[in-house]
Length: 215
Ligand code: ADP
Image (cartoon, rainbow, N blue to C red; front, side, top):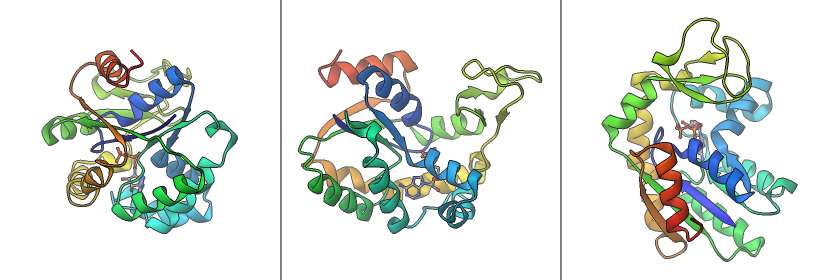
């Protein structure tokens, strides 16, 4: 099963992608996570991407194409995958089409999550992320000596550099200008599942699975 999860930054793609990957037994490929890991490790790609990611820009398409090509060849993708954060440009969508052609993938599902910019700005500016496992919580639930409910690390929650309000506005503008046209590219190439992203996490998962015929 091959799925793209699509929508604005902060709409909940990562949260739903993790849940769906585990329920459907497929790999979760998050290009944001891959880039943040490369930045942490200081690899060549990480060094090229650092300033771009931290200021809310888009990493060049050729670098992203290479990352996806490598990721999709991994063993964990054998049973299928959910792509989270890719493609973000028409050029990236074309790169993906070429890879999927080569891999003889015929059926693609695109899940689009929708929410207004105001909801997104408020969510992103109020979230903290576990620096060890990536789990997300709301800032007001955090206090010192906080134990991560997922990986149990203590005091591991940080604000992502790109979750600063000015950077969030730039990421949203890039989404509207550059990424949202990618949706039209897929209208006749994928099964489209459109979902309201402002409901509870559980309801969104249920709605996605029902619309995909897996509920
Ligand atoms: P969000 O969806 O909340 O913006 P991500 O974790 O998906 O966060 O991505 C974080 C950052 O990583 C993006 O703002 C961008 O700088 C970079 N990035 C991730 N995926 C891509 C991509 N496909 N093309 C270009 N840049 C990307």
